[in-house]
Image (cartoon, rainbow, N blue to C red; front, top):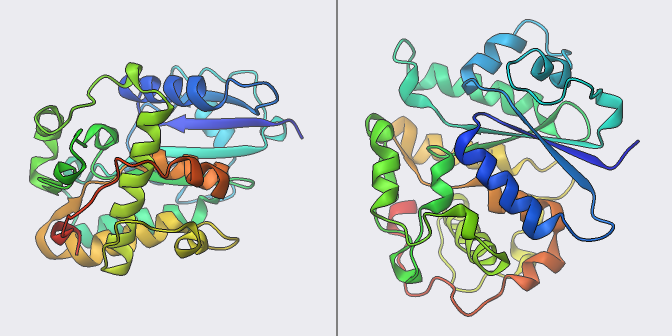
Length: 270
């Protein structure tokens, strides 16, 4: 099997910038595995509609049928890992209740739970722009991060007013390390109802161990704490967590920089 990692994105604009930054900063070194990109150009519930009656469908073949897939000559046997990145997109399906929509996402997380098989699904809450939702002063990184589903349509504007890192093209490893720490702390608080200044890898390694599905854990907490109660989500980006999932403890040790979040109550995530 070739060492090709396929990253499938919901859209093309910001996701293309994210892919290029990840590739340039972490997959451009000698002997790195090859990562390639493809675009679904549709929302997560559309993916559910495509596979709901046949969960054995090959995701590579499904994507190849989409416009602008960029993988016409690729076969599943040539790919070692598949990771899918989609937005929560709850604002675009007013014909369903949150409970019904949640059940569809849970079914997708059950199917796409292994990067070596059908693929692993990662979800942005509320959308890919959540990657940029942080500030230079780490104590400001958690302000205004509870987003009403009814405000999803305005989220890009919300981020533009709550970010010091709007240009993803300028992200270097140091910025990505900050993002890993921030999103790890957000996830830790979301899952455990606790905040810690300095999280050791041993405290989170079970998120990534065999048969553990961190993306499902996150969604269950998002629904029980926020979506199902107040029709809102806690902003969280999967891209830093993907890097941590892929590279593991040595990568996390590189992220232990001084500019960590400190003295924040994390009340918005509890």
